[in-house]
Image 1 (cartoon, rainbow, N blue to C red):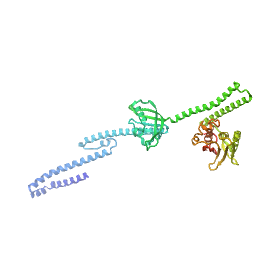
Image 2 (image 1 turned 90 degrees about the horizontal axis):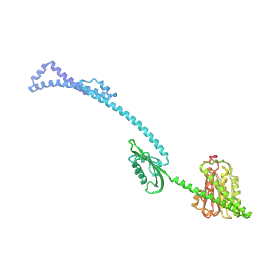
Image 3 (image 1 turned 60 degrees about the horizontal axis):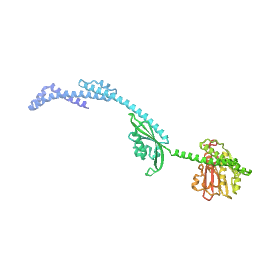
Image 4 (image 1 turned 120 degrees about the vertical axis):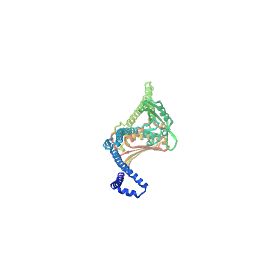
Length: 493
């Protein structure tokens, strides 16, 4: 547009100048009729027009050179190669050279920046992939893991920590550690570990933390024992970059340790009792205290009973431990529940008769058959019926009911007695190892393992359920259910 205007102006000036030069008389006639001032003005205008023509011509050339230079800079992709091709006038060539040098330098710097950006993006991709792998590994840990940076902000944690301290894992990222973890003991451990600055050295501490039950309140209740492992991780400059804290809940291990200690204590006591009886009667036999045959037979009977009790206790312990370890291999076949009940009643009938206890059977006339291990199920029924007879006073009654639940379908067996009954607190512990009701200890000897074994046989080996219903002074009802068809007929889970 500027070039077009310049061309029009140049054309007009050239036309006027041509007329005057072609016919000077025109100028003379015109000047003769004007004032001296106008003649002087015209004489000034003509040189001015000539200078204007030259100036406009220079502007056109300048405009064209600048336009070519601008286009070369805009379209140059090779770092100055397009600028070098410009056919610039001499007065513009230094500018072109400066531009070319600058563009080449900037193009080189741009290439370096692009290479650096590509390297940074590749490194960022690798770092993000490694971070995702670390987070995936952390989320598989059952222990709580918290990682803080040099500004004491949480940079990485896992779901176990979120559940333990009641915070959202996603929202905790890059939040101040002390605003998320409200427990001063743990915060002090992290601060002390960072101040110590022992990079790569693992520190251990035992702490008790009262965990919040509800995140909306400040109520602190449940106290938990933790083993805390803390490690400093160095950064590129060799300083402490982050602190890793791993919190291992020791509650379960402590409970297991207490259970093992309690088990060993109770098992030792139960084993010592029959052994002491056996040893005492043998010593009396050796000392000749049984002078007649009837006394010796009585001693022999006591020794035999205690030996059977000891053998039964050992069998119970072995069977329970094997079932809990999952190494019991059982053979499940079709079994008649009526036959198992009859066999158990035949074994217990002498004891029931001695106490005048009536045993009543309510069995299905057509019989109920199910898949199960015959010997294991016989132990369950025999144990329940034996307990009912032992803990029912004289002239009492024991009722055995076996029926089919067509909705499940499953077998339901109930053993009902008219004994003293069981309190609600004792019902919750009746299936624990070595647990015996204090009021029942005087009625009959026992190991406290029979019901535990029954529970394992029914629930672990046969995928059923076992329970008790009772009221004090109104007897007790022990029951168990077993599916008629087993999904895993060979190996105990």
